[in-house]
Image (cartoon, helix red, strand yellow):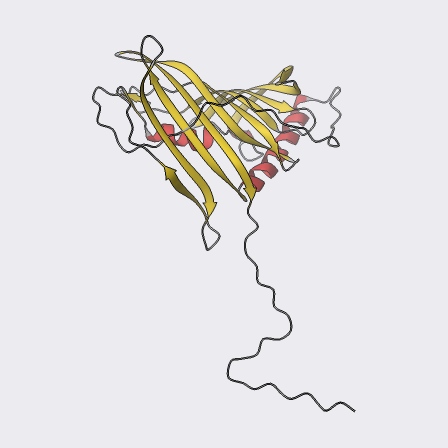
Length: 272
């Protein structure tokens, strides 16, 4: 995010609602023995499960509700930027985003940047698959519960950053049964243009188990002070991902042979 000093902003991009941190039931029959398992083996297994989850999520529709609040020195709301959108499939089965509600922004000091948009889409609902593992240093920190769920805890940071790309840096909690990420805490990082006063908040993202199999992101929150060159600015942000539904697509079932239009059917032979 960049700091600005006028009240004229682009159309609203982000929306949300404050909500309680969700929990979620765990699958009962997917226990993976973890005693004396090398961290490298755990990483390889959860990366493979994350890849499976990422592919599955591409077949789900959901509603995304995001809100960012700009707070004054006393902690009161000075401005708000929000958007509600549905992630759906078009008539030709292509995934698309439909804006449901986007009121005019009332932020006074902040301007959302393309990097913020990338973080919203890819970094805050962070997924670490087999493909992404080589891009990160992943260090095992031990065991720790996340919302009463026994987990493996890892520190994650990018090995090398390329211009134009955004990365996650922080910690991830991996369920010791399902071997999927259930919580992340950190921030989006990347190469910023020299002289750009662009700051990014630390956030937490929680997941819930959907359809008793995959852990999908359902809630992100950030309450942080961004230290700009011209002074600090406290923000509060929430993102909700809800109403997940699997997209089945449309199929046409034909019984028997299809007759060409205009051609007569051959009469059935008389019954004896």
